[in-house]
Every structure is written in structure tokens, then in C-alpha cells.
Image: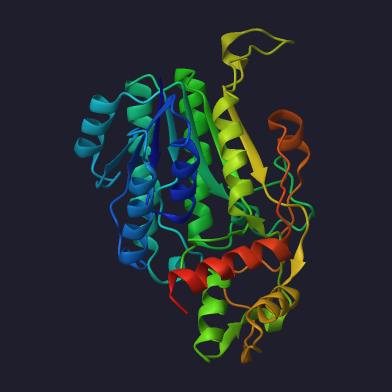
Length: 338
């Protein structure tokens, strides 16, 4: 059986990846999460409860540990011996990084270093890890392409994720360890984090509270439904980068690393105000909007180039924004018993 280790299994994307993988009876899946109180621990526990109820084939295991703790993480690697690792554990949130940058340094840099070290030590066949569209920072070319500069992040969260990409490349080059980084573009859908825009907007509208709309509503986002993100992750796991010598000069010093970076987006940017109108339509309720200036660290507009991921991973998003928002609201109302 193929064995998958998913860090951040109680998180939004990690939960959905586990949900998808455990449906395959030929897979063993282990989740790792420390249940950080950055947002509702109850929501995280409910996600794991859902997975355990879904676990009819008894092929899912949950470890309640922190990837920053090297010794505890090594015990999991030694016991489970994963073939594939998907690192989704991280301190998330662009705006929170403005307040607590040290938390990002610890979780996103030190934690990821432990993942790299143990993946190398236990000969993992392929390490796939989460990056973010925020690494494009001050880049003004659109759509964002993987070969565009990503060296000018405008918040520390993006800086830590760009650092992960560079760290992974060095390990791939030095130890011929296959790694793939995935730059997610504004993921949304059922079971999402309460601090994310869709959950926050819906929650406030339902509770008759105003919603804060930054940049006076002039943001544009490449919203990507979580099921499409998961399909991209699964495809990435299966597509292991290969070690190839430079065809022009086959010297070991110029050999390429078994390393790839892909955007995972939707390539259909949506204006923020249209997004809000779709929420209002589904809730049959008007939002009380409080317009605010652009916040530090915010990127005004995102759009992903899909050329590379379509070519190599055969990725094709299937969920439009209308259906995605409807699915989320149906889940929200049911989960919160509204």
C-alpha cells in the first residue's frame, strides 16, 4: 500500500486532501496537526471527527503533534515510514503576519526544515509542499507565471513561503530528493477558516454585522475552489520530478534538481464586489459594507498562469465561482445550524 503523510490535516486544505485520499482502499494516510488556537479549535476537531467517521476502511491515522518538535515528528516518520509527504502545516494568514512575524519564523521556517530533514533521512519518494500566490509580491506582470520574479514579497508570510521554495530546491539539488511546491491562489470552499474572506463575509452578514472591505472594494482575486486545489495536489504527488543532467554540459555541477514549482489557480479573476454580490444573492440578504483603504501587505490583483500545470499535471479546474459560493453557504448554514 502507498503511504501518505499529510501535515496540517486538521487545517482547511489538509482536511480536504485527507478526505480525498482515504477513499482509496489502497492508500494508508496519516495526518499530523497540533490544533493551534489561531482560529477555532472546535472547527479543527470537527474536521478530524468527520474524517474518522468517513474512515470505513480503517486507513486513516491522526497524530496530534507539532512539526516544529523534531523528536516527536521523527517518531511519526519512523513508525509510519511514508512514501509521500504533503506539507500543508503552516502559520497562515497574511494580515496576522504583520502582528506576529516570529510565529511565522518558527512554524513556517523551522517546521519546514524538520520536514525536509526527515524526508531526506527516511527516503521519502516525493515531498509536495504548500506555497502561495503571495510570493509574487510586487510583480506587476499578469497573469503570474512561475518564471516571474518572486523575490520581492510584501509581507513576512510570503517571505517564509518563498524561503520554503528555496530550501526545498537546495535539498533537491544536494540530495536528489524530489520536491514540488504549489503556489495556491485564494482557496475557498466548505470547511474553510473563519478568518478567510468568504467565511468572514457570510458570518457577518448572517449576524447583521458590517463587513470590512479593503482597498475600497477594488481587489481582484483568482478564487480557486478547494476541490480543484485538491485535484491539483493529488496530480502533483503522482508526478515526481526527475533528476536530469544538463543536456548541453553534463557535468554534475550543472545538473538540474528534481524540483518543480506550479501555480494552482482558476485563471478567472473575480472582482471583490461581484464576489460580495454573489454572497448576498445566495443569502438573500444585503451586506452592511464598511469600505477601508488598502491594507499593508495586500496584493491588489492576482491571476494565475495555468500553462505549466495544464501541460505537466493535466490540471483543469471544474468549479465556477457561482457554484463554489453556493456550496460554501450551504455548508455554513448546516454546520452552524442556521
